[in-house]
Amino acid sequence: MTEIAHFNGKLLPLDQIHVSPLDRGFIFGDGVYEVIPVYGGAPLRAREHFERLQRSMDEIRLENPHSVDEWIALTHELLQHHPGNQSVYIQVTRGAPPKRDHVIPKGLKPTVFMMCYPLASPSREAIENGVACVTARDFRWEKCHIKSTSLLGNVLARQLSADEGATETIMLRDGMLTEASASNVFVVKDGVVSAPPRDNLILLGITYDLLVKLASEGAIRLEVRPIPEAELRAADEVWLSSSTKEVLAVTTLDGKPVGSGKPGAAFRRMHALYQEHKSRLAPRRPVPA
Ligand code: PDD
Image (cartoon, rainbow, N blue to C red):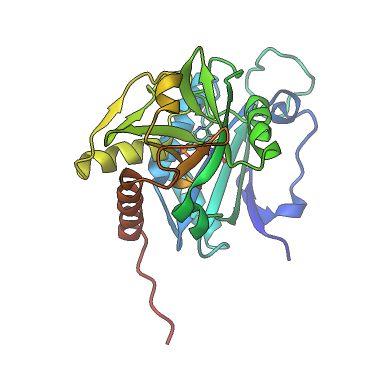
């Protein structure tokens, strides 16, 4: 039996879902998406994810077929078929017009697709020892704040690290830190955490915002400001954040150790705050007798 997914208002087996080759998502990458982590049936920050989906849709002039509350209800409906820890993937494209034309057609029905797959949380090894990253020039476009399905820039960036057996590619634009191919990046110096500005050059991660909130609640000093390459390279700690990676320490950058070469004290504190936050949200499931 194949998994159940959502397609244009219906729940269907994944292998019975077919998309038109004229769909603008296929032809132009003309669509937006979200990835929401789910712990024991409880989505983490679903509202924030669907609010960001709305912002992405506004940016690409695509009318949202659902309100945030409707999206949340659809997510729970799909999760009935997928217990446990999951990633929910949501994609909305501009739909399938009768012919290929760059101009945005009027009155097109968007294509809505949602699926689940088991959440690949970081391994104990990755949490305890950190991960390797490489750096690259950020050669993507100037609308990185849109969570667009046009991910070729991110795909090519990610491959540079995959080729080296590393976890992520951390990118620099005009000598300033932006983000990684599928994660946000934080640096720590003398106990102060810094994050790049919330502008058009990064995707404003839901996890980024959660770390900012946890830092403020946990009395960790955190500054949002431009971060020059030299600060990235001289940092005591570098972290990655994303809905699937949570928060991870980067312990080597371009083959050189970051700080002591081990996950630092600030990371361990933030990781603990994150786990505590997750445990507060997840419903307590009854222990089977
Ligand atoms: N990626 N920056 C980029 C370019 C990303 O693709 C992602 C997430 C993030 C972190 O965002 P969030 O904290 O909201 O997950 C930052 C997702 C997980 C993906 O494409 O699979």
